[in-house]
Image 1 (cartoon, rainbow, N blue to C red):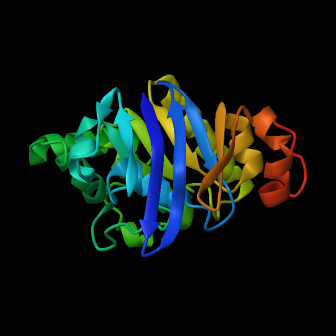
Image 2: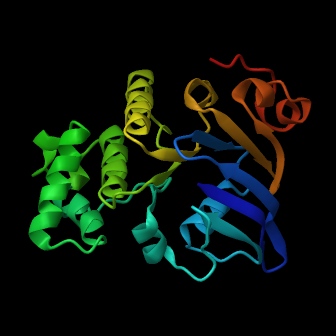
Amino acid sequence: MLEVRRVTVDFQGLRAVDEASFRIEAGEIAALIGPNGAGKTTLFNVVSGMIRPTSGEVLFEGRDLSRLGPADRSRMGIGRTFQIVKPFGGLTVRDNVVVGALTRGQSVAEAHGTALATLERLNMGHLADARAASLPLALRKRLEVARALATTPRLLLLDEIMGGLNPTEVNEALALISELRQEGLTFLIIEHNMQAIMQIAERVVVLNQGCIIAQGTPAEVTQDRQVIAVYLGEPLESA
C-alpha cells in the first residue's frame, strides 16, 4: 500500500532523514520507532505531504505522490494525527470532527452526520456538544483520531497517540487500533511506549539519526544488537 523509496530530507545542511526505504502492506500495523530526534516525525511529514523530500519518492497504492500536497493526499486516503494535539478549543467536539469531514467534499449536513457517526464509533457521542478545550488528554487524543477518521482514510498515520496516557488508557487505545484494523484500516504508528507497540505491531522500522538501522517483526528488532545499543538499552520481550 505504502512504499517509501530512498527518501532523504536535508534542512540547511542538516540531514534529518537519510535514504530511508520501507514498505507497508494493506491491512498491516507497522511501527516507526527510534530515539528522540531520529527523524520519525520528519518522515511522517514527508508521507503526509507537509514537507517535500530532498530526494527519493513516496508511493501510495502504486501512485507517486511527489506532486501532491497534504489535501490531495488526504483525499487519496492518507490520514494522520499529530504528536501535540491542538483541537479547536473553542469549538464543540462535534464541530472539530466536522472540519475533518468537510475536507472530503461533503455538504455541511453530510459532514455533521459523518462527525456524529465517527464520535459514536469512538464512544464519544455523549461528548458531541462539549467544548474541545474541556477534554482531558486521553479524550483529546481520541478526538484527534476522530478528526482523522472523518476524512475516511485507508492508511492512518498515528503520531504518539499513547504518550502521556495511563495503563488503562493505553489498553483502550490499543483495543481501538485493533478494531479499526479489523474494519480495513492500515496503520503506521510512531510510539515510544515500547511494551504497548510490541503488542500490536506486525512490522517495526527503527530509525536512528535519520537512517533506518533495522526493520522486521517485533521479535527480530528487539533482539537486534544495534537497536538495543542505540534505543532499547536491553532486550524486550515481544508479545
